[in-house]
Amino acid sequence: TKIYPLGGLTARDWQSLLTQLAPGTIAAADPNSNSLIVAASGEAHQRIAALMEEFRTVVTEGKVARAYRVSKADVTVASQAVSALLPNSQVSVDKLARSIVVVAPEEEQVTAAATIEQIDMNAPGAAVSQVYSVNTGDATELATALRSLVPGASFVADKQGKSLLVLASDKDFKVIGD
Image (cartoon, rainbow, N blue to C red; front, top):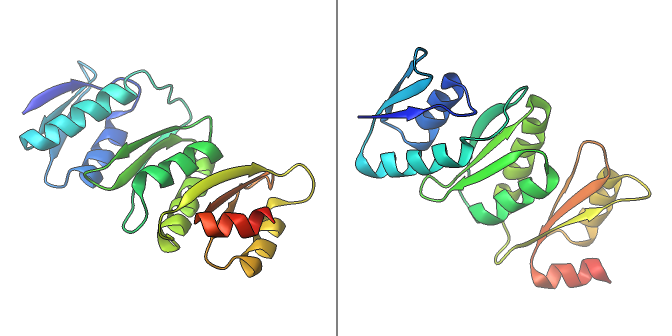
């Protein structure tokens, strides 16, 4: 059992994250000391300590923390894609739990969830991600057009329609570039 200072996230956020990232962990908040009391295995404590340190100084007002599990895709590539689409959010990877932790406003969590789900569902081999700025037109319409040309790639448009995330193999990027 260890005691961790909460830092930028609320006790509720930490309890939710720990349930997802370290099953079997028992956590209780201590409002008097603004800390979290955690009973977990030694390995889980190492991961929790690293995550707590990473999020200690994050500004979380108006934001929520969520963990998203990745089953097929490369968790690092998926987290980089989310970071590129949501530059004002805090994104972290827990490789052992194959999860991505996102601290962002609720509306951006929708984008994070959709992006991670699409990347995971369509994970091509040796995927590379690239975010393109769409200056004219709409990224959603561009994604629809590109899907018919490059069915093996994944395309995710941001909700404003100004950025397009592409996850594809090198071969598919050559088709897109042409």
